[in-house]
Length: 536
Figure 1 (tube, rainbow, N blue to C red):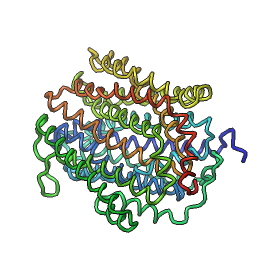
Figure 2 (tube, helix red, strand yellow; figure 1 turned 90 degrees about the vertical axis):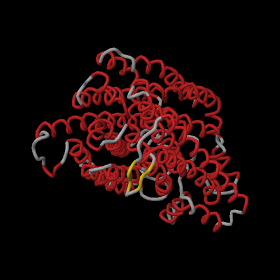
Figure 3 (cartoon, rainbow, N blue to C red; figure 1 turned 180 degrees about the vertical axis):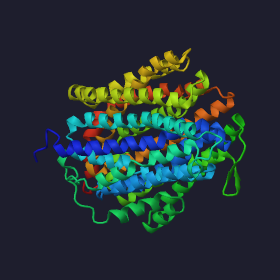
Figure 4 (cartoon, rainbow, N blue to C red; figure 1 turned 120 degrees about the horizontal axis):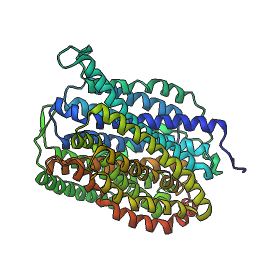
């Protein structure tokens, strides 16, 4: 089979649409950060609760639904799947515009999480089928750059829209529909999803695996398989699945033991965090709920879903299970990406509030300056590192990509300390320029290494597994960690943001191990799949 050497015109169209989807998803996901102070003041909730909204509530549903939707992306039309999910999360974003309390905001974040769950599995799978291996660093750079653009636009759009609305109507005038500025900002952010969904629905579906020379056969029942994954990863549903597939007493016993161990660990963590940062209870649907118990219950469910997914995968798709579980390099990529995302989300979730509180800046000013800087530098970082990592990989294999990540993330905590101890806004923005580069340059090379560890038909599920771990550890823990430390230190957001960098030394150690394994483990993927006697 002759493999394509250059991306076709349709490949660039696909990349543009998938990149726009990535941009919109980050905008709708992160707009909560710039609106944080207004929502806190209006709804009378604290930093830990905002961490729950920004991270944990979104994270659980985003992570859990990424698994069945990742499976669906491996068997169904990915453009159609993305179109449906964009429409869903845009509707959920708009719902926040009518929120009058924590419960409605939590429901909105739940819907955004479910809708966005298909974005990375389906989008990455599409792009990899259009772009040959030696150009994937560039393609992933474009996607990462547009993620950064969405992150920056969330601050610009959110701050400017909220300030403009409140300035136009003021506190003493009746605004249309009784909306506050932050509510209007959510409604505005929801609008671009409709035209983008239509364009993705009209996009041609590429031949799955053509760019790798491993064309995958059509999936006869992708929806049934996706629904089976959803049932298999949920509590109770997993036991029915294991019993139906006659997994044996030992498998069911190990599942039960994992559940008990996870539950015990979450109880301990909830009590420790409650002692460190006591918070008043949340009132949800008439119930009084401890926010720390809610936080760690959600994280525990995510951890249990990982166990369930791997057990069910072994029974339903032995080839994928063998490839995924047999690659230490893949798991190193998953863990490194998840830990670094913990740092990234913890930083970006509270930096706008840090600027407003520390330097006494307005939301509109922070939104424009911080948002534009984050967008511009965040786009430059991946666009530099993607092609550079392709060049390094051509000369040193996957180890070249990993070496680049080691250098970037090894510098990260030192630059971060300088940023969040800056004496004034000008010094902050100057130092943050370098920091923003570092926080985005690792994405294309690490993602390229990750997805080259598996075969084409397995990329949707691999992306879903990464999303699950990255979301539970990164989005689920990062903002909550920072919010809890801020509450504990009487609102010292600078110290709270810096505290999450304690993960950096562990990340560097794991990357050094990955450096030695990445090329060898990727080369063995086909052999691991064939060893279990199933088609690749």
